[in-house]
Length: 306
Image (cartoon, rainbow, N blue to C red; front, side):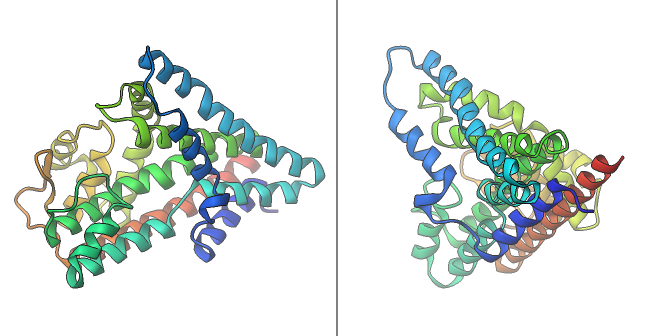
């Protein structure tokens, strides 16, 4: 008999495939983001406030999601598993990432202004002066990095916690997603509130980022690609201790030069991605995500029945 954890994952991925993303007004992560917007202000001691926010808000978000699943579990275990899947669906995102990257790549060849506009959904950099090749570079980088942040990270947390408790699995995924959201909204050098969430996110994403690099390399049949000296050197160029790993791996497997102006240049000897390279990156990201799903379900079944 299939485990409750596997039912939750299959439900989440099914909804992600069919619906892609819940509407913003009902999206828990979007609601969490609105709360963070309200508290993103000036404080007399922003470092302490940032620590308090990081220590309490993700826990509160995780506890809320766990409570929803626990109520459903008290009615029926299968209902609880499906409810867990519905909540998990809002915490992981694969189809939206793939669709957005694909659309930016396509628009980069036909409407540069639209591509620059749409890139804002993927990357925080100023795209107003980027040419088509650099827009595709940013999209490819985002495909690799966001696979780790928006999909592998929460999914790994769920996989680790669900065998103990299905509601705990959802709570783990929600906590990771909340930490990542805090980092993306506050974790800038210009925002003193962001020091704590940025440091915690660095710790939380250490394993998922490297796991994502491994999954990307497995997806193209080169499982040891992240261990290559060039990939390791490129990964060290980024300011984040984690983001460089999936990006450098993606740059090596295409191969393509991924260039963020005045920040890093991965696979510098290659050319910037053309439409074909960028489209291939979308396909590799999709395969890596599918591999992660299969491994997750197998792991949940093995752990539950071992």
